[in-house]
Image (cartoon, rainbow, N blue to C red):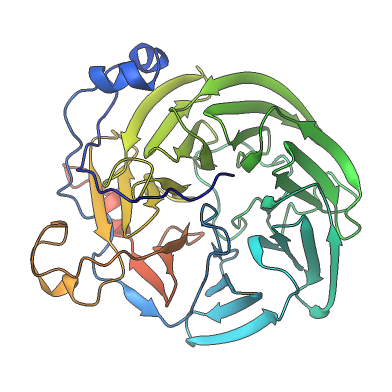
Length: 412
């Protein structure tokens, strides 16, 4: 982790597709010179006017912006607000406090099965059962900030297929079917600023496996098939592991851009993974060749407002989208079939949606107020994209019919 920048500067749009994987592997500085034309932004993958859910959220560390979860097919969200964790019923528009008045500021959270886990800035881990939140146990695990927590994903025992069953899978590497698959007890994955990734038992939090790195670790993502893991931290290096049960083997170390990374995610096929970096780049690899497929830039560009804080693939169905949020105000949605089409959302203003030009930051009709983005999450069935703001959570409806259709109007 680093201190906030002293000044904030706005940059112009420069999102580009890589010409070749070999050009990108020469490094992001050279790659930016070899990219071909800009991505086309005149697409609508989600309805541009969202539904606003009156659920407040807060970020307790300026670089950690993953505090909104949609962990199951139930119409509910979990989010962090100050020292609390709330559950919001989307259909009833009702909020319930799950964990209240914690004695630390939570910065990370995982929900799955009957467990909820939150991590804090001084190595705190709070573990509770959703069926009995009063059973909360708080311990210190690790030497510094618990930047990210997730419930471990066991390898799928089902035949490999392209799409995941949205009724079986949930976010954050946990499902009602595989939370203990292959294990006697559930597992918790913890990324800490003390240069470690730990695999712990739940609820006892005993260490099973510990991986050490040369830098603080900010995020880790296990592939949907449970056999691979990517890890990112305070340098531009990306660590790729094979995973078998509780064992991890490093198979590659790659370079993303020129700055630290704070988010990574896998496509539903477990073949692509994306890394979001603080200098405003999102890099996508194909794990089969370990080559960079594409390197995208955020709408605002750069490590101030345009820093990428969160990156998420659509988790199910033939939707094929990659969403990534910037430090303030903007969310990008990219078509992963070609990486040549993008939709840019300016979030949070109640006035901008009444005007025909949604994406002109210099327009005098827009309220140019920075909106702090606290989280980004697809619904498990990819029907909606949720964006956390400090005063509310926005729900953008995905045009799934449009995504199921090609130019010939053929439905797949």
